[in-house]
Length: 166
Image (tube, rainbow, N blue to C red; front, side, top):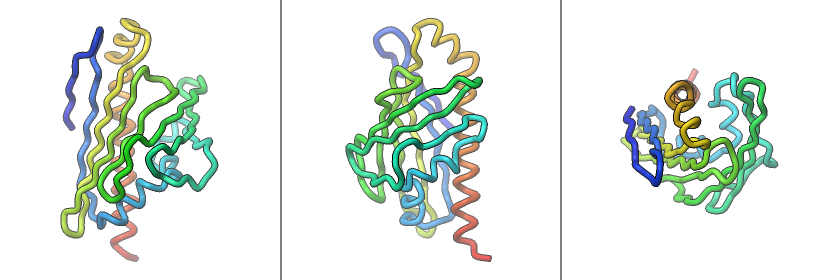
């Protein structure tokens, strides 16, 4: 896991980067991520995450996806848009409405024979200026790391189990 900080106008644009190799072919791995309903399966239960958009969602550039989640029993509405869609290679979703002042999540996929390298790069900026920066230092960064730890473990379990047979 790599972390970097990119200076913007007044406070940093944070980055969370995770790379993993899944023992499943590229087509199966990409299809799993392209199915938006799988987001509920790979998101920790404590977030009470639900997709609000009508399923199934056809993924392509311009697709909007509505979600709800809650933190400390506070409901949060989140809407993202797919801003780049390159089947089998990568896609990017960007927050249009939600808890961050900026959120861009790049998903990249690369074939490694019978396995697939999956790279997540999340660039984000918390709201509320100095208060948001303090929340990031105390809680946000650590929580995002836990969410992505869970996500990567779940993806590995689900995809590698389905390719290993009975």
